[in-house]
Amino acid sequence: MVVFYMRAATGAGRRCRRRIGAWRISSRRWLHQYDQQIRLLQKVKYWYLLPPYVGLLLASAGKIMARTAEGQPAGRSRIAVAIYTAVFAIVWWAQTGLWRAKPAG
Image 1 (cartoon, one colour):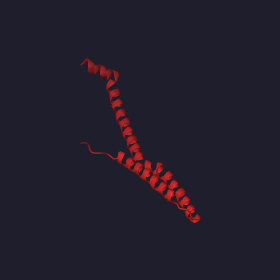
Image 2 (spheres, one colour):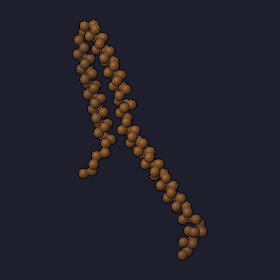
Image 3 (cartoon, one colour):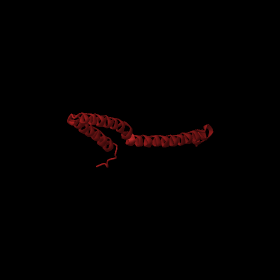
Image 4 (cartoon, one colour):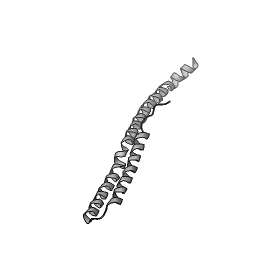
């Protein structure tokens, strides 16, 4: 009885309820931010892989066109395009595969 009286007199029960309510709000915010981070990581490949790849592709296309216009072989440039396309594809695949949820078991 004394414990209940002390809790009621000091307002400890209300403070505990406020803390629990604040924790629930805080955990909801945390989960929302966590979901936003997951969405960002799923879309990150579009802003860190595509711009350099498109730039390299355009530069290589210009180099290949200039070499063929001069009558020189453009085989090395085409091999370079194939190599960095493969590297970007592997990084893209790894990025997509790593963030996908895998079933336990």
